[in-house]
Length: 171
Image (cartoon, rainbow, N blue to C red; front, side, top):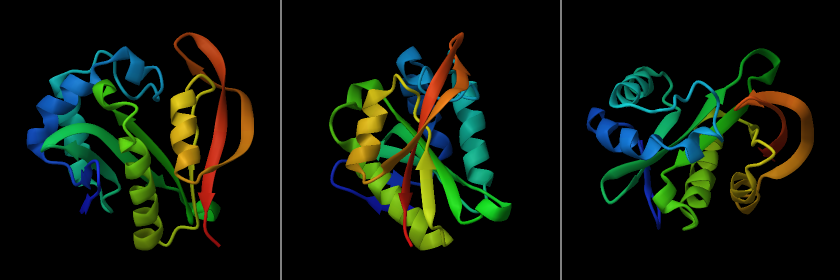
């Protein structure tokens, strides 16, 4: 998969992305806003395992954010099952040196459209932590709407915290 955008390209992962992924992902400011499955510190072995997982997925739903032929972040969605089978949860991260440039908003819009167009979805949602105002702004700029504050719903960095539920829906 490859979607060329103004500020970046969203594409399938390649094994040779591991070095740049490890370099950008090894950042506590990124880790603090992601699930605990995202390791910190983030090593080259972590990057290789993640890329191998992405390459084995069927259907492919986790993608590289590329700028200048360098993997600078990741965006992906997990399609739910059973009664929620027309929904997916989306997640993303971007190397700190690229924050504030509109890259993530552009990538989020594109991957949301891709998810709807290619997987028959009607709803894509995200669960940013209460302290992650930058991600909340990205979601809002991409057309996601706030639905609920989930009180004391996550435990991160030794603290019980709230999450917000943001969703983009198509009838």
